[in-house]
Image (tube, rainbow over all chains, first blue to last red):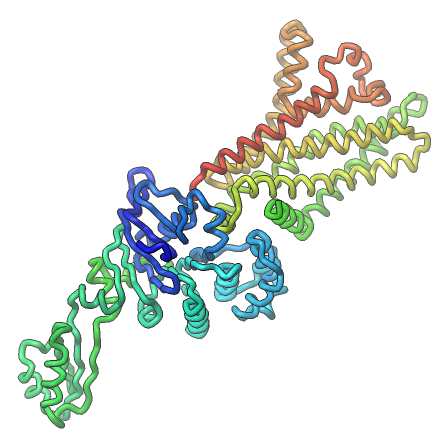
Length: 309
Length: 277
């Protein structure tokens, strides 16, 4: 464990009554790293974040945030952490500007910073309106703005992109990328796997309080041992010949197409075999296992099954 | 301190914006004026008490009914409501101590009550003094004491309200408990005491015990403070006879009210501090 790590969890456990919601979780998050926390509702993601903020005391194990124990040095830790709760709630009667100004006062930040942040999340024009009139997307952006107050060294974002349209999501991840470049550690939880694929450094998979998978997407794919699939478009009539060529590897046949699959380590062999088929194959597509597939193989169930946030 | 003031200011602005202050101030001014001009009519003009002193007596009764209710309405929602709506989670993720939240809300709400009481009663007092000249300095003093002690009584019920708000899981429960608290302190306590005295033909309790029993109810402490505190008022409140043997001094009454502010407030803070979100 390095002192430079933004977050260190070591055997962290939390019980509510006789229900264990977090079960011996150990992981580290370095400065400038983006870690995605995946899991169903109730997997323990939010409880982990609450323990990092010192809002909930662990029943076992250790949590260090920016080198401190958040339960003991709560004020110091929270000054350097930004938090966006799941479906964030604001005081409806206050305007966007007043809301941000209120949180800025509590965090001892100047008014200019609020102005800059509202512009950054695209709310400058709506700043004078009551939050009660805001759309879900606008609330989420205001939520991000308050989380960015005081240039935090660690950002905890709980389901930050639910309810955002694709364009907003894009700009949201743009801001996350800028923060990463500045050395901010970002921990974000999500249901939306596909959008995370290219936008996180590490992925932690939680299932019923247990950390069941941790690593880069590549690591996790490898650990999961899921097959790589191919989709070959075959020149008319040759489908049977091509399918015979791959024999047992073929998992899927639709008219005009043949779909072999193989373990990840055999991928190049299969590609070479495809190349050897010459002009009988008009097109080839390589489909690595998706994050959805990886998630399902670690938790035993697909993520899309979970209730929406 | 910045944080406490930021939270207090937020509460004040909320109260001003949703017209809560306007509504309560108007209500208090209207009732106070009504009591001052209609309630004082039967006294006639041959009573040696100024109109303002009469008004103080009427307003003291008004305060006992209205101010605790207003304070409880502000306070019951303060903690549990924010927890239920989800705004508390975000606020607690900031470098804020929980006592700062309780203190900030208390300051803000107390300021709202001070505005409503000060303006509402102030208007009534000014109107009375204008309509019936001959109001002495002592009358103004009594009026000042009434407004100050009304705010203090409001603060008592704010504290009790926060304690309820910190204890319960749901807003509706807090609302129900707030009404129960109001009924007990404003109506049932005195009724019970009166019933007991009547049943025992006044021999059930000694004068000393009776004094202590009145201190146990902040509404009674407030009443006693305003009705026996000043000579001009005492004459008129029917307390002139009782004053010679006044069981408790005004200072003890003030101290009782202050204790009624501090103890529930500290308990509320302790309860809120231990609560997990």
